[in-house]
Image (tube, rainbow, N blue to C red; front, top):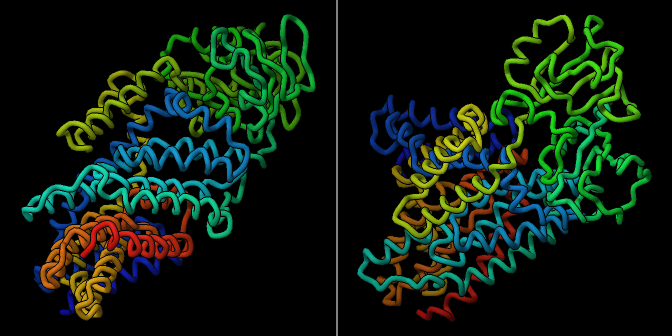
Length: 595
């Protein structure tokens, strides 16, 4: 290998080491490492390292752009409540971490066998956050299992992952008959079943339970909020337990007001009736999450009487000052909505619950109001003397439940278009993104804010480093070295091809590894005088088996920052899965596809 190959390997190793030590932000480290390669290319003029144009092309990669567009598509699902509508049964059934994994991972693996992995994971990210809150676990114990389940499910069919489709095209180019739709299933299904069992059994010991230094439950403010059971809504006739109202983190149901009397000490078997007013007490984050529950609405529907449409309203906090004109008056007497153009959703007065109905609360200095208002309210009242402080609530965009089915329809059409038509997943995602904005499932500003730019930067930089490993010959040298160890034995050669593909996948992404190793595998089979199909299947499975680093697969990168993971988490949790899948492949492939 030349110095370019050694520099590429050293740079990739440095990135892995620096990320594992968390010495700086992930996107900064990735950009710094790819910058080293660009500088070396500019100084030396070699064609074996990526130029600035090559790296720029990496940031314009179709897969990277697709991930960015999918963030916006998922924003439309989240803001309309479409995700909760489609997966509400998941939230209601989960009572523990094991239960959450059981209802999450199986369906994700099944869907990933017939849909592209990336949109499946993107659509489930909000569900994972809600599940984690409900069962009192860290999202880090669900996000990486989510990615792994999608990868395992994608191994089972030709359309489960772009890697399988890419290899199918390469097989056809060689003049061989195309693989059947379920060709990978002989290995993929056992691998998926075993993998899911391993994930559920090992995650509690091998995955970190990282939680923020300051939890939402540590907030000393206790908001009192009223919500009405919507007539004809999803909660009518359900018990408190089945409606999921007993497992809201940082929030408890104080009483139910029904036909002029109060139901206190509400039990889990108490049934909800249309028009019931639920009085809940909890922290801000949980009150915001409460707005997502379908079948609940604010009392008197005050928010809908505001002039601004739902997509132009958001939740804000306002602290009542000594100059407020409504001091000493109740919210109802002061006609808050009429005078201020905002609806009061909840009130906090220190850490105690406020008695009576929300409209009967008499305002005092220092009361914190949670309001649903337009951006104009924030601009006008920020300089007002009536409130000490007016600020937006993080994640406080108002839900648009009337558009939930429309958002779901857009998502389903996107997946079907990408799966069953010649449209690429990027084209389908772009069309869905435009549709979400056009039909007001989300605004253009909300779509922009939903994009996690650090994820995109890391993916783009990783593509540049992968290009360096490929172009400099470093990846091919590693693969050839492993293959030479087989010494002409077909089974050992198959194992060497699998291991080499798996290592390349972890370093230079799944599709690049598939392209690089396919030709090596085909030539190896030809040189041995055996059927190349076992080697093709080995490359297909191994190219998707990316569990030990965040770089080999897009979904691993998508959850890397969200879960607060370290490189060591992937190694500790993913390496045993890599090894077990290798054993499964070596046991099954020679028997189903003999040499």
